[in-house]
Length: 81
Image (tube, rainbow, N blue to C red; front, top):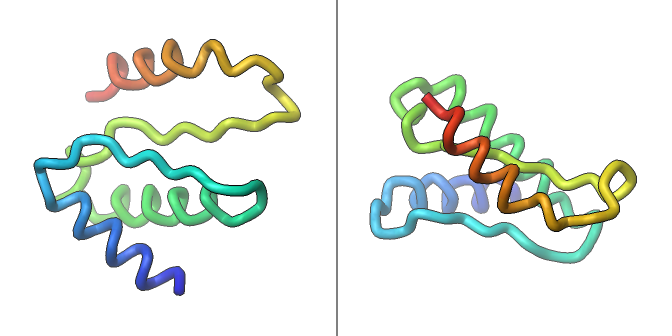
């Protein structure tokens, strides 16, 4: 279920040995919704605010070229306070 997955992700956040979460899967399997829910939860719980550096959503209808992905990630990390 979604709550079980969010609990798993929260455990991942507390494990400082893992620094990147790469969420991949088939289209329309709620990856963005799940990570967005996690993002919202972390933003509400300010004790975890330093654990989230970037949330990136790729929209195929807006962007046909994924070559800017690394640049976007780097920019998000630089802008992170």
